[in-house]
Length: 484
Image 1 (cartoon, rainbow, N blue to C red):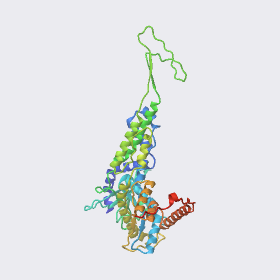
Image 2: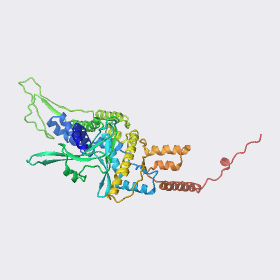
Image 3: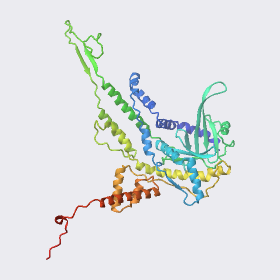
């Protein structure tokens, strides 16, 4: 029974606390809260006084958001979902769920979590009589398995539901954490001490007996790792996210000090010297001393271009190690040094990685729709909790087709390549237009093709109606061949 496994689940949660904390940082930075983490790293390297001057020079350049957004594109062109062996009513039920779930937006968020943490958890649920879908952040769940034959099979899902400060009966304040554990058969709510919480069980609308009404864990888990049920987090992602603004902060601080020369004096009485524009300093040699007064300046110099080149090289090499083709920026110069980092991120090619993601999420969608139509929707319809009471026949499956994940290519290059294919007879004009305008449907493509044909006809008619040059016998008459 699940209640006898709570102690083991809490032990696993404690062991995975580092993983949970790591994901919490990534999600926090992805939401835009980068500066505190960079400041903390600077604090480990600089004195308190130096840190005060450096904090205001930290550039708010968050490569994590850019990288994750570039990788998470498989839902940008809406996948096509269908019920090949189903009826029109089955297709209508699927469409209704797509709309209720806001499926593409939610799955896109799930795709983002997947690219940050190498796994994601998707939860269908019911809210005010409407089915909903959400992606559970990776700092709020663990998965567990007690399957001795297949330890990669999820048998338990634990949601870290809440953490609040409470005061006990003796007036002592302590942190209370509430967890929800799911198996195919049971759902139980417990706290950090392993005690069952029937009060929370009722508050969260679970039955008092702890029975799972669906007969199936109501989550879909997508895991990138083939060796670990919960993947080992990539420390390099967080490290590089912090390293880039750290190195740029070093440059900003260096540039600030480079703007000011250090004035030094040797054997000079500096008591009356005033630092002000248009001031005049006069020094007299001490006749009783053989030392000569000397005044000079030291101007710090930093090779900004070389440091930026180093940042670009490290970023490009790291992206290549992740299987992402970084853009080439050519020779580093003062003109392109600042734009090079941005160009690497903007123009990196993630096509190969996205193709792999499609395989994971094709399986995730198959599991999701089976969970909904075989387990959750039948229960909701039976208990009249949803307005749509239609049922999907047993054995009918939903098929999800993703758009082809093409390599990065400019529109101009795509036009040139398609033009060559049409001229060579390898494709039709209609197919070329469709590939160039993937968001257009068949009717819009036909309209555009007709408009192009009409424009071309107008140009030909205009050319034919232009005045033609008069025939000149000396230049235009066709010469007849001589008789032999």
